[in-house]
Image 1 (tube, helix red, strand yellow):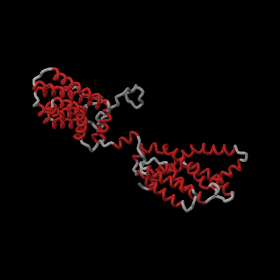
Image 2: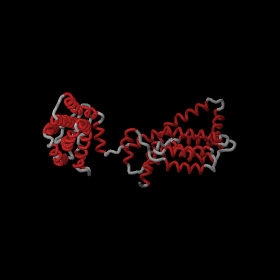
Image 3: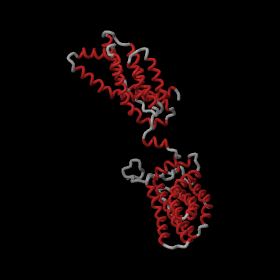
Image 4: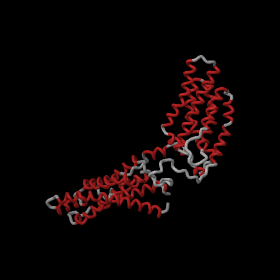
Length: 416
């Protein structure tokens, strides 16, 4: 990033820190003012305060008081400065280091009331015995920077904050010999601070190892998908009770197991596809992205097929060969469901009756003729090709209005 770009970002954070400093200045200036006015000799109390903060009489205690006040201001401003940094500023062409340093400018600016108060007290302290301690003035910039770093909520705060606190303590001594060491600690703390720590949903999204399309689809399915998985076990349970309570021939028992597993898979695929079509409809604009139609269809088919392993596993405990026969049909069924998501016209939600009906018929035929499972497996490339062709026919510029009540929506074109 160019120097002018950093200057613009720093100017933005400078304005943020200035607004925070103005908000904090009123109570910080009001409380000492009231305390001084309550004294019998207000002018003498003001001179004594100036001598204690800036003169040799204050010593380390005055430095610690100033450090605590700066740290309190920076800690108060930190969440207000960093709240929006996880949103649109992340899209700017700048590094995490530039974001951090620009935000530290705001945290330092928020401590302006402390510097302004000391500036107003400086003439009174200069006329006292001993005058102003040079080390106190030299340590002020270092103390402000250390307080900003001590309040920065970075990912490596455990490493940077101890260095910043040590710099604050060294600056509080007002010893000119220790100010360079405090400055070195501040620079080390800034290098170790790290980027802004993420919280809540943003952190979960960044830490997810799933590809973005699968992540969006799984979030769209939500916990309600568990109910569909449980419902898919009902046909398997019914067939299990049928086999346990009746004396069936091996061929009939195997066919019943295939029928239960097939119906369970079709029920689950239908429920998941309906929910996915409503909560995460296929976005025609995604056709303009580098990923092709074959990949889009494969991602949806994989997402729909994975939960089907539950009824298949339940069937495998009853009849492994029956579960294997239905599993051979699963690729074609999942690809047909993924193709059904690619609706051909606007204004349609949900899935047509064709894929569920076709899946149920296939499950019934495989229950009677298990050899059809091999034909279904061989037809998977054809189903993939058909679903990909349907995805390619999506019109990129098609407008699909949100499916909610238009009344009260100022952005709805059809509201009356």
